[in-house]
Image 1: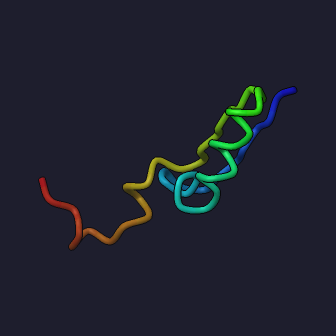
Image 2: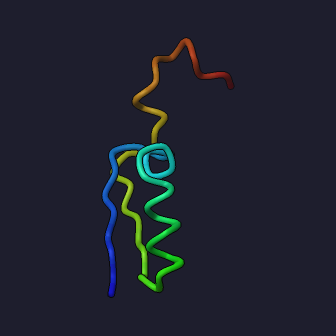
Length: 50
């Protein structure tokens, strides 16, 4: 069976349900992740260092 996880930002899949993802994978599920944003544009410019 396949599972598709859809998240807004990078690292949300780990913070939100990393344990569930690990369990599903161990149980033989094919786990796919779709991340809708790249993360940089959601941060203010003061926090970004060049």
